[in-house]
Length: 251
Image 1 (tube, rainbow, N blue to C red):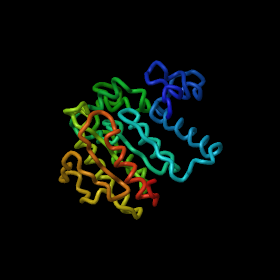
Image 2: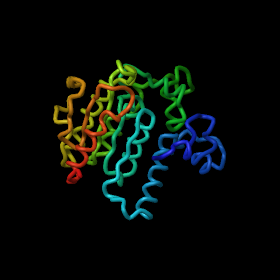
Image 3: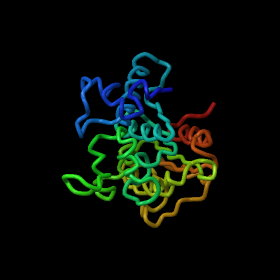
Image 4: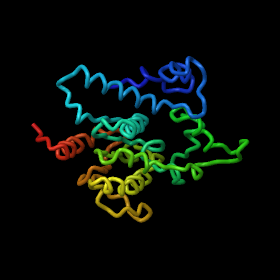
């Protein structure tokens, strides 16, 4: 297990400390400096460096990473930036994770820019600005979106997990927006020679499947379980899916 706060504090006041503060020698961030999500991902990569160098029992070619909520975001960023991670279980990650930024539904980008702004680079804050020297910007002005972040993980194994609002996996996480992003990321998985979700890549028309529907036939997987803001309910499905795709027979 990784303790993210041992790498970088989960608050804006800690930006001049932790690994971000260390590389900036205690000074404030510049607009294009990294945020906490990328710092946590760096920490995960350093942990993998240790496992590779010091733990011969670890199969370095089949190391995975898992997280829920903000740590689901961090797990996805880790996979996107470090190709040594072979698989990820990305749980209930919402905006900044697998949910489309430019979809006007659920949690707003402004919630991130005005609240957990320190998760991202400082430049991200301009997309929540109603008044600024450069004018007004919103999520629609962001030149990239989260389907591209998912695609950066291809052709490796990405399992996107959510629960249901009735049990506490809040509606504002925008489960449909995450499914749309997964659908839109599919062409890159196919381009690189592996299966995606197995549906068309028209994210505007594909409908999110019913709860407890397992879409586990490709290297990109989706399953919405019937529990809350956690991914334990999908863990057995993730393990079976991962074993199958790495050619491992469960013991």
